[in-house]
Amino acid sequence: MPETLIPAGSTVGALQIRPLLDPLDNRILLGHALGLSRVSLITQSERVLTSDETERLSGLLARRLQGEPIAYIVGQREFFGLPFEVNDAVLIPRPDTEVLVELALERLPPGGRVLDMGTGSGAIAVALAYTRPDAVVTALDVSSTALAVARRNASANGVNITFMASDWFEALGTEKFDLIVSNPPYIASGDRHLAEGDLRFEPAGALTDHADGLSALRTIVSGAARHLASGAWLLMEHGYDQAASVRGLLADAGYSKVQSWRDLAGIERVSGARLG
Image (spheres, rainbow, N blue to C red):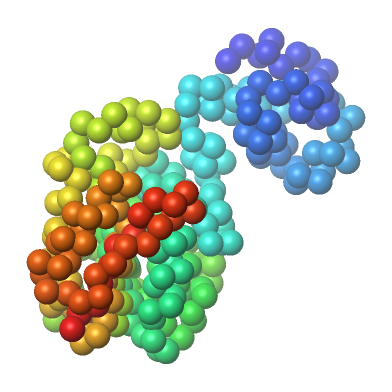
């Protein structure tokens, strides 16, 4: 991005009056580049950017104008009221997934053992461990780079989680849990959304199963029964048009109380059932 788009001598206030981006994105990047809080962006509106600050902000704006997600640019995203480090090794946590966490909290017994499959940034596992410090939380992922991010997020939020490198159930042995949750890859191969917006920058293996969008969900449904205690729940996030298919998978596998729940947009986003 040419530096002339941010004229020399620009003030903090001027850059907010005529933003080059969406005002919210602009404010986030301006605060990040200058190390200023939202309040400071107001109280220091007359502050003139140095040449180094102008160059740094220009670089951030250029990345956003090319479509890179804000969360990756600033390296952080809030989820369930907690801060999470994110980079291009993990999906960006989204508000819709908070529904999965809320449902899990309602079904997690005191001192319960919970497994988060395909943990990515660790957002679900950390949110559960933080909200329920009595819980025994295990989180797994096949990606070592994702697990490194998840471990840092657990440490930063002061929670104790057992992390495992595993291709779904492969490394679990005979261990059983009182609840299993997952936000697996569920976008079908070739779906146009993979080439749009933030998804272009997120890890493909965490977004799509490179098949019909249901293969990871089938694997979880078919294998979970061996690792669920009697009466325990399995909860899974899925695509906007997959609820009926996932309920079918659960019913065919013999689970009870099969149902789906809607996200903030009214879309059936999570389906689950009980063992026995």
